[in-house]
Structure formats: structure tokens, C-alpha cells
Amino acid sequence: MKLQTFTQYAGLIAIIAIGVAVGVSVANAPGETNTQRSNNLAQQNFDYLLPHDWERTTTTEVDLNTYLGGDHSITFGIVEDPTDANVLYFATSDFEGTPTKQNTVSIIRYQQDTYEFERIFKATYEGFEPFGKPADWEAEWNVLYEAHVLGYDNGKLVLFFQDANDSPGRCAEPIVLAAGGEYNRNVVALDLEKPYGGFIAEYTLPEDAISAAIARQDTCLNKTL
Image 1: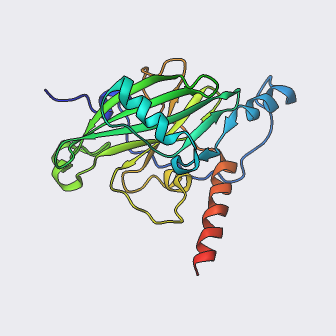
Image 2: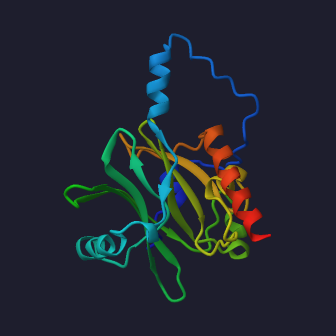
């Protein structure tokens, strides 16, 4: 039986090339007060942990595999909900097949105080199915997607999809890669109120998040020279 594909879950999503905005206005939206704008900014978070920096990664993966089945691995990043510091969000991959042909992606909401978790999204993707490419390109591209949580933006999770075999280098910043929209790298948003309502393809990463990621990347590259 053919598994549901990324495109079937996301709707008609084309490859997204997210550009860095130039000269972005910081004026309030019509009818918006300074307080409202400040609150909106406070509901963004693009800082995340890597799995090896979170002390609960191993035990949480054991719990996920016990209660959900499969062989889940937590991917970068692990993002704190800016409206509730007790809540974390992250994605997992569960690869199957020899050689690997499928990846079941789960998005997890995790309660830090109780160690409880909830799978809020699940989709299985097949290899040889490029994102946004015609079917007759499948054999050429050989893409198998995995997901990463890059941030939280006003009730939406910002997700980065890339080929599981993508290896851009030690200093590469995922937010910069996502902003570039190249090499089967795609950024979408997931509405937490309706996670199965389809990905939000028309999502632009905040300029300050991109600038901070570029600065980190440049610092890393300079250290390696």
C-alpha cells in the first residue's frame, strides 16, 4: 500500500525559497498597539537545544519507543514554548527498510514537570519522492525527508525538512539553510491549533533569527580558519 506522502499532508506545496527581507519595517500593524506588538514578539523562540545537549534525550527516546513502538530518534532542535516554559517541542525520525525506504516523522509535545508527552503530528514519507518535484524525477533525486523543529512563532511550530542524508558541514546553521531554500531544504509552519490542517507553506523566517544564525555560522567558520 502506498504511504501518504509529504505533499498529501501539506497540500499543494512548491519548493519554498525563503529570502532574507531587506529594510523590514518595524511599524505596528494597523490597529496594533505597542503592547500588542511586544506580546507578539515575546511569543517567538528560535533558540533550540541539540539532542546531545538535553539530559533527557536517551530516556525520552526509550519512553517513545516503548509507548509508540518503532525506533524513534530525536532530531534537532528541541524548542521551549515561550508561552509555557514547562513545554518543549521536538521531532523524531523512525527509519524502516533495508536499505532505508521510509521515515515516520512525529512531532512531540513534552511536559517537563511530569515527563509526559503527546504526539501531535505523524506522517510517513517514502524515499525516492522529492519534495515538490515531478514524479519522473524520483529516481534521480532519491530524497528521504526528516523534520526538525527550528522555532515557535505565535502558536505555530517552524519546521525544517531536509534529506536525511544531507550533510552541509559542521558550521552550517539550519536556519540559514532553511532561508536559502536549496538542495531539497524546505521550511514550513505547523499550526498547533490544527496540526493536521496542512502545512503553512507561505512562511518567512524572521529577519532577526536569520541574522543571529548567520552570525553564529560566521563565528564558527572563523574559528576553523
